Amino acid sequence: MDSSHSVEVRATPFRSLACPKCKKPLQLILCHAVEVDTCPSCHGIWVDHPEEKQMLEIKPEAFTVAELRRLRKAYQRLSKRDPVRYAPCPVCLQLMHRVNWGSRSGVVVDRCEKHGTWYDEGEVDKIREYIRTGGVEFEKLRLTEGGLSELNSKLDREVTRLQTQINYKYMLARLYSMLGL
Image: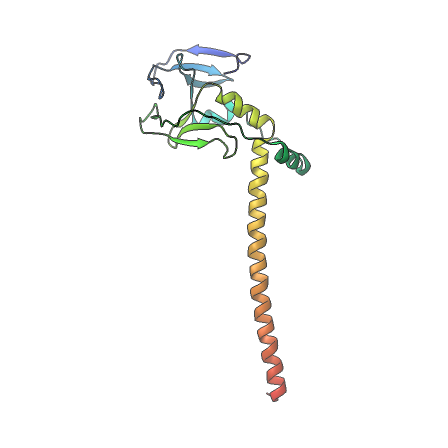
């Protein structure tokens, strides 16, 4: 974790969690006014779902379409070359899912769908950089463009279907008028 951020170690009166990677007891700390559990050995961080956005400093900033297109061209995935190891959730002890944070950040974190997310050392800083450089906004643009593309495809299919019906009815009307019906 970036040493420029305030960190305060607190007592853990209500729960005692173990690191999913090295099994050492986690310490409760205050990071960006958010309580997180950290491993003093491997420096990983456990964040409960409700506090994750606040800890990562995700703000609803608006980017222009031009800025988003520039980000798309400049964006390069962060890569992680560590061997794949599934870790248990410190709360329920079930194996967590390994997910690419934000689907395109290149930072693979361990996530328990019920309880929270485990960040290995340095991953929080990489994700904050991804967010700061517009990665979340890029994802929104990509999803929006995908939705618009899907909507355009549906619209094209519906226009084709209606045009076929119109052509069929027009041909029937001409046939009936030629037959005098």
